[in-house]
Amino acid sequence: MNQNSLNNLQLSINGFGRLLTLIGFVWLLTALGLGWLIKSFFVLLGLLLLAPVVAFFAFQWWLKKNLIQSACPVCSYEFTGINQAEIQCPNCGEPLQVEQGRFKRMTPSGTIDVEAVEVSAQTIDEG
Image (tube, rainbow, N blue to C red):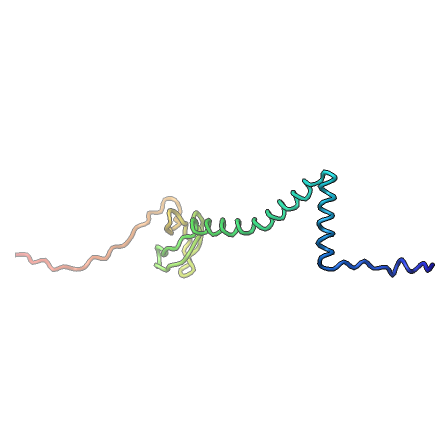
């Protein structure tokens, strides 16, 4: 007998044979009381397939809740920021704080922030 004949032996299982082998393997594990192993594998596989879908929808919900679009109180440039974050206006460079869905200027303590109001000139007749 040739010693290399065992090295040349090839196991080739096609289509239906693979399915039968898989079923036989599953049957053997369940017969040995290891069915929990297969069930655990399928649960883990299901979680791995479900986790990205849940994460995608959770991220969309978080963005809808925390993404704020408003105008800069200094230059009126409209842009987007994340709620409760400190950002800088991309147009004028003013440091801003996002609070309650609006951008507010970050001023040092003791600074009084006022808004200028334009008053039109009126003629008063004194009579």
